[in-house]
Image (cartoon, rainbow, N blue to C red; front, side, top):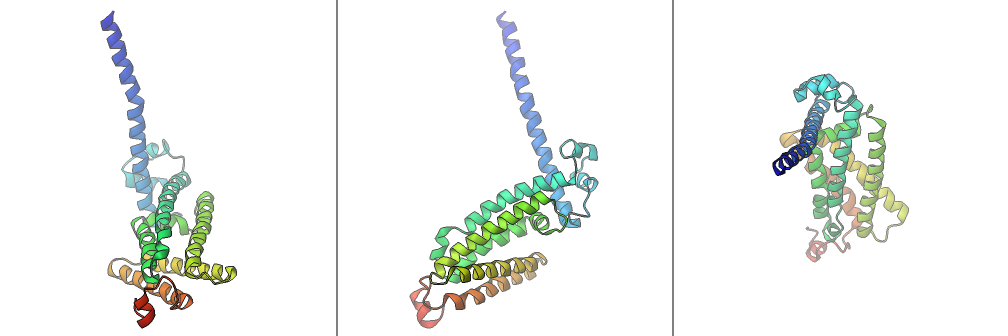
Length: 231
């Protein structure tokens, strides 16, 4: 009897592990398909991509893909959700409140570097957020994200421009944000040394726009910078 109970217990334990193993394999397959989709979307654009191309990139049959995703839109939505989640973490760190203690040039580095790096490391994010035929759910999430980021930009600039009226501050924040987005388009369109050059140009454009507005009396400028104009 004890032996029988032991065998039954062992079988029960094995049965409990099998669903977890199947779940782990399923999650690994989904990750594989999403990685393949990211590559295909970057190479062909969302509209021209197909589930067959994604399955081929992943090294699986279309039938295997359809076990996890019913169509290309479902793949894009899942990939977009994951990237948006990671992007929220990135811009949350980029707009850390401690950055308002920095001089303007260093603040721009602290804010822009992680945002640019994320887009360069995840080009599918740029494709999914800027395409004209992207599923509506991604577009809606992107619009919410845009509003939130603009609010973060406005919050940081409010500390550098405490005496600027609210309406003007909003315009300055929106202009700075749009300069960043336009510059990011150019950054993403190039690679290697040219990309680095465009990153420098983007930062220079942001600095040259904001520096005259902030002025020499900003509390974020070091004393020697106010005296001799250096940073």
